[in-house]
Image (cartoon, rainbow, N blue to C red; front, side, top):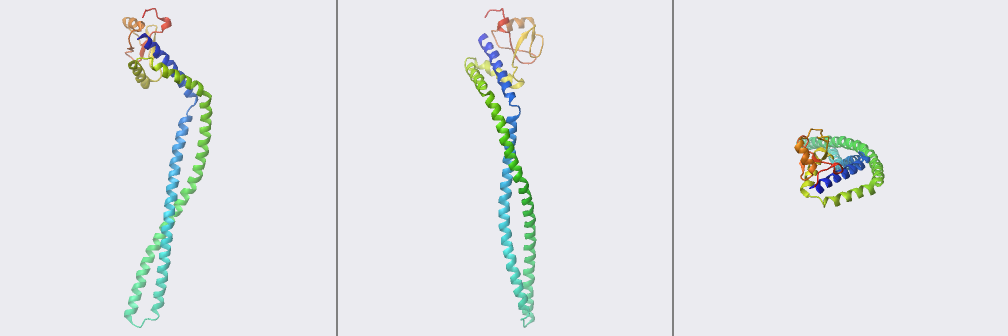
Length: 241
């Protein structure tokens, strides 16, 4: 078990070094993802607006054609009024004109609504187009900055990562799982050393008998206060394995 505990100390050292390199990137990775998400949403909105605008203009063109036909038909009926020879014919033509007029009003109202929607969509598109262009420029700049920082630390980062992966293979998987579980909950300091009779993680006092067991490094022991894995630094240990 001593080899496993020593290995966990080494793993933690590597994790801290990896975290330090990741910290050099700052929030750039998060910025890139946020810009990408915003850009995707804006592009989707633009695509939908443009699609709707095409459909709207097609509908409007059809209705304008329909309106023109009805207006021409109404005009012909009005001309026919001058040639009627009976009240019956006059009433029939007048009823037809009234019917066409009612339909004409409905189509004109629909066209006006389409025009309002078209104007609104055009304004939205006019806002989205420069916004997308700006986001594309910002994304390119942020990705370039991130790539520069990644490149500056990539060799060291990959070397540390490889060393950690190789070290993992030599450790007891149950001990490694416990380490990862604690690390996920409280951060990189999942392993704490015994210093001056206390846990170096939370500074809680460790009873004497417990200290002896920790110094022996023969079993995986957790701090009863903070839950960290307790170890005794090998350079300071005088207890045989």
